[in-house]
Length: 261
Image: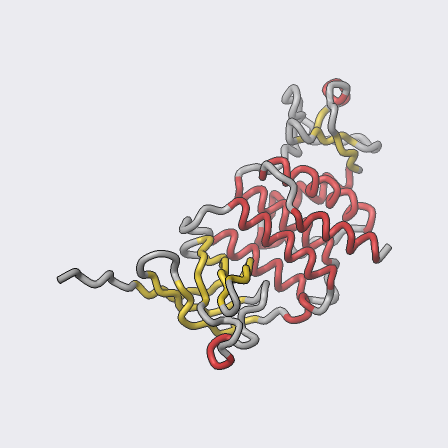
């Protein structure tokens, strides 16, 4: 007589990052959790089960989930909402930013690797994005920069990424960031750059402050419109290079921003 495959039940706080329709009634979900990082699960009859999942499985929602693991893909057994972040999904721009963060997170993460720092960062960013008083562009700068730090690809902002010369003191004119080298470059090394972004000294100083303070204080920072635009241009060019491909959501985000002038 064949032995029954053991079923393992896991409970977790989870942020829903991706939802893929599967057949007429089912969906495949991708979550971010603190203890297991990226977790994918099959939600059977999710599109017609009013009692179990109606209105619960919305993107960018913080949930309490119960996942059961038998043979094959884990399946979602229960889900309840902890924080809906509903104002994100009623604003196309905020939704586009959250979609971009979700895509780069799904692309970078491996299944089943603990990600406590990233989970805390993502939840903090969603809290800020949900606040109508906060600039979504500034929140995205903070998320991307701290995401890069967690991923081990933080930009070099204190020394020249070409020759290693210290650049603690910045000139009043704009400085150059070399996208290929991944950091600031001095006047000499700047001549060798083929892909660079210009940054005001004030923008660099804010980015440095965020890196020094980390998540505990970073979300207190405020950017001028000009500094926010410079930082977004830098990070949205720099981060995809380390992912190895351009996120599709970044194009949609650009269209929404252009439509709003």
